[in-house]
Length: 113
Image (spheres, rainbow, N blue to C red):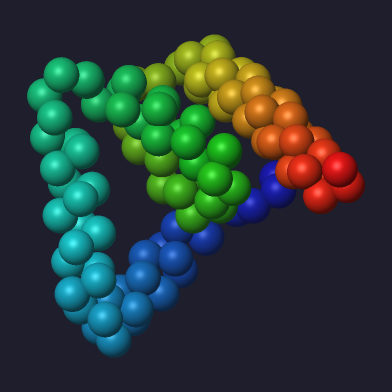
């Protein structure tokens, strides 16, 4: 096990609570944004959590992975569905690296000549 999410998630929630106590407007703004995404009504909870989990991987957010993997399981996602969503995240990251590599090469070309 790379990260014990059963141990990590409660500690993360506590730390976020402490941050919220120090910066309540910031936490309230985040909660409003998160709540609005959950109330979209078009996508079911399982689909939203699969998307969130894939995005969590692309943004390299351990806390998001811990929380959204639990939410995906609670919403009924299967291991195969999670693996397929993560496959999309992997492909997107590779695609983003390709696009930004082209941009970097272009930027280098602008500097050298």
